[in-house]
Length: 350
Ligand SMILES: Nc1ncnc2c1ncn2[C@@H]1O[C@H](COP(=O)(O)OP(=O)(O)O)[C@@H](O)[C@H]1O
Ligand SMILES: [Mg+2]
Image (cartoon, rainbow, N blue to C red; front, side, top):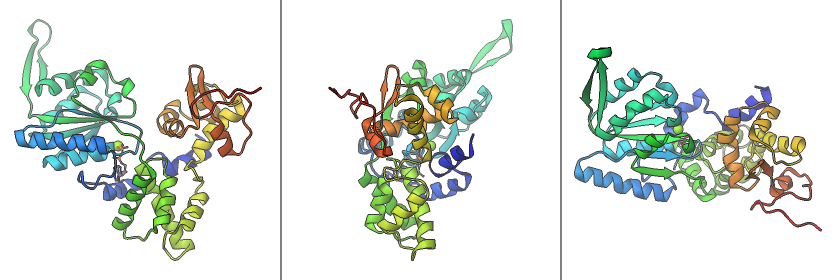
């Protein structure tokens, strides 16, 4: 990976280790504190209330959507509101069946097991999950050949909360075993401003309403990024100002970090720039773009494309991605005549 790619990512993509502590501190613990995603929250509140009345666990939940939108946070809230324990793991962390057995057999009654990146569970491990989800039981096979026997081992009832950025990669049998599905979508600027204000209070810093709004505008619809930008602006305000986060300080601080007025960072602009400069605006396949900017197609499809699609800077066509007129305008470049607009419609030019 190039140094430029590294730099682009540090600010906005991958959570740096020192950030983990910070994220924990800012993570909402109750439904009340969780901003936005009203539909998902309202429905989960009902599920939790009903489960508590029946003294049962909540049905298994599948959460999907781009990184940083609050999937892990919701799993924690679910356990907290149930008054049970959250156990956290992830698809790639569970390599062998035995690892999962160990986790499942240690769950307490109505605990919440959170599996992040569930689409990356090894297939053999996934198959162990089926009876666990369905009957709260796991099957042990003992002995071999003629003497092989299967022993059924009962588990405590538990709720599996699984998160994925790529629901399409889940196998049908796994998907069918969830009773509750929620798609988390990008947040509005108003919601992000509320998150920024809430975080500033927790961090004991002062942010002006206009400063919070500016951070929200540049947060790419994503709470994790909003909190990250807040931290950058806080540093900038301390060094270049009197510590108070005004609109002007937010704008200058984020400009200096390479986060532009629409919240695009270097990686976003390299992605768009590659399509424009090397492929005449597209259409071009994701693999070709990835090779051009020396990054991974998976990173681009999970962390870059969703927001660019959302704001209408790119469109997907059967032949690949195309950059829209809005994106050309944002980049300060002249679009070729047949460039699509936000809706992907071709402009008629005479
Ligand atoms: N709805 C929300 N309200 C307030 N803060 C949120 C919300 N969703 C996410 N956050 C903040 O963003 C950070 C990232 O959220 P997380 O749950 O880890 O996202 P995901 O698991 O979807 O990648 C959390 O630390 C939390 O502080
Ligand atoms: Mg997460």
